[in-house]
Image: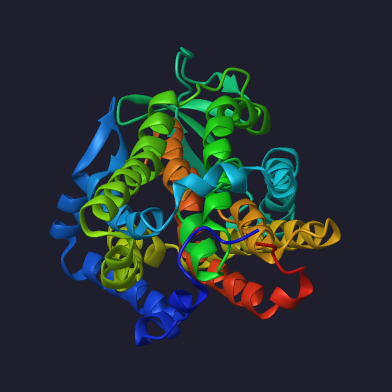
Length: 397
């Protein structure tokens, strides 16, 4: 199958930002943390510019703008007339569904429980507790027991006091049940994958996430009546995926009609080359200016949470990549199929953790750690993909 986007040579990392992307990512993270420390009022003001559902900030408008400019250059390159053809590749589509919904949620729970609840529990603190929001619709008296928590009064508000490690576990679960529907376009593009197929898989995963996110969350968190965050999911998917998708589709048609396909490919796409990388780096600066203080205040905690997340990401990637090779899937389809399972939709996970447990909860912190390791780990996996293309059959035209 032919890749449905720009020619291969346009994907070579020629400029200094693409060739040393890992370095720029690290510098952007440090810059974000520094901005949060040196200008906390600015970071706080930017963080407060959001779309709210109730009292919870669901979509950060500054981050949404950065993600749009990160996604649009990729979306506009896609020849949508070839997407249906790409969707006929049933093997990688089936593979990503199995990875995301039959394997990944349960391996995430198992790995996180092993490390956070057993191996690292003493380091986190056996007696350490966390205060989280009361479950929606639950009216209990102070002192009542609910699951592993106890209802307490904090600043005049009823809260649920739970073991801290369980709160971290909840955050990792929310990451594990949120397959990536935005950043995976960047990883697939850098790995020279099939962007048309990536779009098909993202669309399918977005729909299945709407149906299964609450069900899997409720089951794995052990909450009998976990509320399904429909507003957060619909807003996140609409803003992070649908908006750049529709803009890319219509602007591509308009530009080609107005200026011709040659001008579009040779002039317009060339101007967009640095936009995706620049928007990615700006997104990281903003994210870590918002959450850098939390990370600096909990350096060892970050490590305890990062280890199971790192292992989970690699496990799912290699499992998907290995199965794709066994099924003789071509490289352009195998790379995005493995990456969409390995990466997480951390925007949705952060929003959901904030809505369900509170901004200062351990669950919210765990989802922020997901952001911390997501970019460098996925960049490493991109490099692995590029160096192992010879493992797979060549895509047919």
